[in-house]
Length: 588
Image (tube, rainbow, N blue to C red; front, top):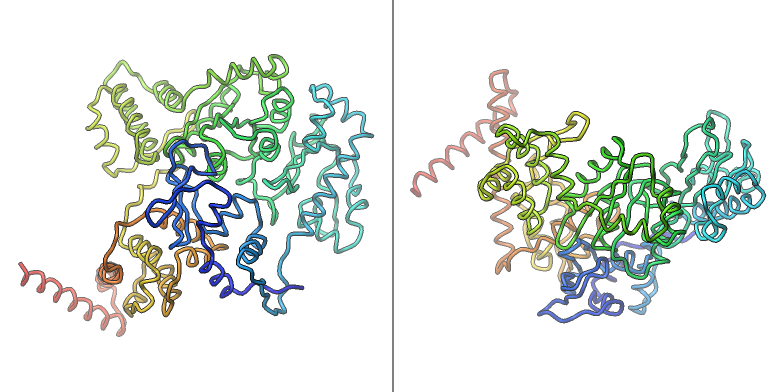
């Protein structure tokens, strides 16, 4: 079996790759100094906010927040896997991709994708002979062509039908377990989906990654049963119907988010193809990032009952941090007892689209919900509304939308806009409001540009100028979040010449720190004539802060007694602080 691709090869490949060529061959770009600009290929916009920096090997969209390297672009735009993206860049560079000899086999998801596809075909074939399932779907108004487009199938009743068909030997059975198709309970293995309508879930490339199963009998367990988390399926990221919507719509003006599989299928059949559904989970930030790369507007559609209102409010809270330049969100509430499926069948696309036109803007929905919880005729009630609005406004990125919404709140409570803005930004933490339930957590204070983040940004933006930078030994003694990551970045650039930011970030592709690094890379610093000097001064601030914190810890512990090493450390730090104080006094 082929070994892993050497990291040195990936670094060298990215260093010789011209990011401008990679993106320029797929998107129309325009020269802007040493960089390029373009209308973002991941969301609709008229004014270019997509910046490409070949020198750094990194792209960033200031509109939707998309960012990454040449590999990331190929994975997002061409829908390639990581290995396929490397193969594509290597082909462009005219080089072969080497493989390391290794006794550890490379983990491949190919068998998982294969058995999931085979299962989808098998489920689909079963539907033809399952008259009760056919009758149920026809009763819901579904036609054969739509069922075919969405690969809808049927899992027959019984404990081992799928196993006998697709996983009769031990190796296949293990793959079926990994894919979530069967369940192991003690010494027993059996089919997960039984006597259910099956809705295959496909990724952006059209590969089957999971299934949703709907019961036809109210007494036959949960209404919906979904595949579990697997190596190829993560509920918080995927959206049912997104692949089918992209096949039907060339360019999205808006995307509608509903709650159920049948809602998606029914709307698509009745001429509303730009619709997706979450997979039994609340809307996540990852869902929204994916949607806003495709469209400037998202409309949430919920039932008008209490549960629907609560789900809508949760969606609003998740949406607020994503309301960057040009993005819009609206909410459509259906009459109680109705859902998108029933409305589509009763009113068709014309009637449903008319309802969409009346969808409530996020700002209007937010103000309506908050006003219902207060007595707006009293001063106390208006003050209460301002307090409820505060944690919500704090979540919104700074910009025109936040300013306008603050102005709306100020008008509602009868407060000067500037004074309300000061109140919003005063740094206090308030518990966010949830309709019909108690607050469950406090809003974290927005993070600023700390010395640690500043230092990491310097390394990310000027790695080629830090090859000879000497890391202060005292940095390793600082017990502060971010120090291990900063140190690792500095160690990577040691002795390097011409290393790009993109290479640094790619080193963290499969690690949780990558997203944080990409965000920091997108926050451009002013031009620094001497980045090494700036970094040195910033590290001194971090080290000094660490010393102060350690001295405070030892001072508190002094009353309980310090061991010999701690006492020596305490004396050394106390002398250091005294010298620092004296030095400041001498300068003044």
